[in-house]
Image (cartoon, rainbow, N blue to C red):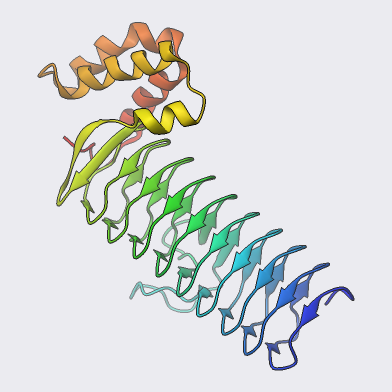
Length: 262
């Protein structure tokens, strides 16, 4: 089903069974495979490949040479009908690749809304990317990685499979992330280590001084006071009762399977 207001270049290849909503634009020499759904107002420029099952939300911009919804590179994948779901208002720049999930997980790779994926970013199978994240040029997510809201991953950085990148955190450029990065923390290096709190990001997003100070105390408990993780959590408990952000840090630590960067 193709809405009458959709603008599709004559050289584009659109397979049967595609759903294209109102005001979608598809550029020259782009291929849209079967089982693809494209939401209203999305623009897909020239030389893009989109395969399904894939759902793309509203008002996204997908630039040339991107590969969206391709089968994953996991050798365990045997062609099962897995899926990629992309939210709204994402900017997906040149040569970005996003792969569908595997049956070893939920079978779905999920990308939220209002994210920026710069040139040559890779989002592997079964990843979950939240909202308002920025992945800079050549950032790479291995399979099953979770990136939470407002996280920033610097260029040329690679995140190990099953790692979590916490909300409002920042991974510096050219980093190798082998363990989880807690919320609000700056991590950098190979392997990545903690280098403080993402103060500038928190200020820009409207965090009040009291909460930022509480996050700073939590960081000191984790990384400066020579505590074990369990001892740090006890020190953080009082602030956690007052500030959701500190409670979120504790919950993140409890959910970590690979351990947090230290």
